[in-house]
Amino acid sequence: MSAIVESTTRPSLLSTIRAYNELTKPGIIRLLVLTTICTMLVAEKGVPPLELMFWTLIGTAMVCGSANTINMVWDQDIDIIMSRTAHRPIVRGDISPRNALIFSGVIGFLGVLILTYFANPLAALMGIAGHAFYVVIYTMWLKRRTPQNIVIGGAAGAFPPLIGWAAVAGELSLTAWLIFAIIFLWTPPHFWALALYKDVEYGKANVPMMPVVRGKETTKFQMMVYMMLLLGATTLLTVTGVMGLVYFVAAVFLGIAFTYFCVRTAFDTDPAEPYAKKTFAFSILYLGLLFGAMSADSLVELHFTQRNELTSIAHEADRIRMRQTQEELQRIHNDDSAAAIPGLEITDSERGY
Image 1 (cartoon, rainbow, N blue to C red):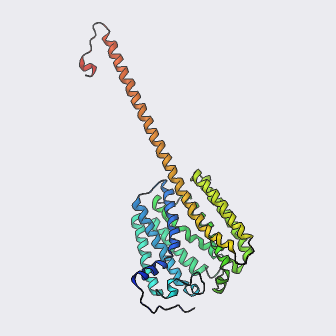
Image 2 (spheres, helix red, strand yellow):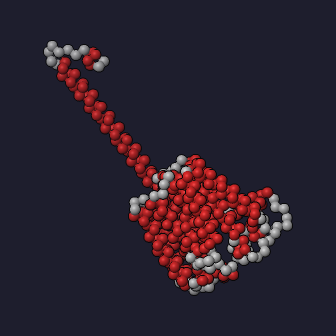
Image 3 (cartoon, rainbow, N blue to C red):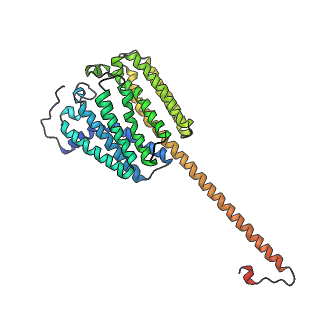
């Protein structure tokens, strides 16, 4: 294991807070929280109670941050080798592995408690499952053993939407698992794009990423396979009637754009893999916009549903008023007819005065 840099100066409180925040991988957390928010909107078919949303997102962020922190502790020996990760807090010596593990345990435990109390036990269970999958299955087992590490380990990033769905619905429907599948299928082309232009560093760190073990051509081919599967999964949400036109149009155009980047990457012969870099960057934008389209579609559906309900209420009110008017006119007509018959008098009480 490579030596970790030891900090010789006493850090300020602000720098310490920043270092602990870095342990959670805030960039990844933001994307995971976004997918959770959007999934909650889809599950609710509108806007869930704000208190539920707030605490679910806090709990999800804490559980995911806990898992990311353990990942940094476990990978500290290879993080120092790779330029992309050499600046991480443990590698810099800003935070000791022991303190990082304590921090991870605290926020992970609190995150599960928050999900259990403010959401429900199923949401908490999904949080625990996602944490265990990322830490044990991916980080400790698969990452350094197989080029399929990202394929199987990609399921870890798909758990936050399950947390969000469970928090709102209290169960996991087919739609929840379709959303899970979208992130699962998105992960290989997303991460292999990174691995294509970081293959030398992964090789030095002895991480068997697909480009290192199977070569770039195989990696690019498999990226296209997963891209096609992803396109199918995204359209299934519309085919099953869950999503409407807003989502479908966005999914099609985003899918075409993502496919374009993958194709350009596949035919790129530059060893520096410039299109792989662009594909990696776009893949993040793709997922954010796709989930944004899901939530937008749900809100549009809510708007039209509420408008139709208000229209129906207005029509029903008009029918009631019309019926009351007709009944009143009929009563007046009957009273007038009775008054016209000799010997038949209508008293004030009978007239309803």
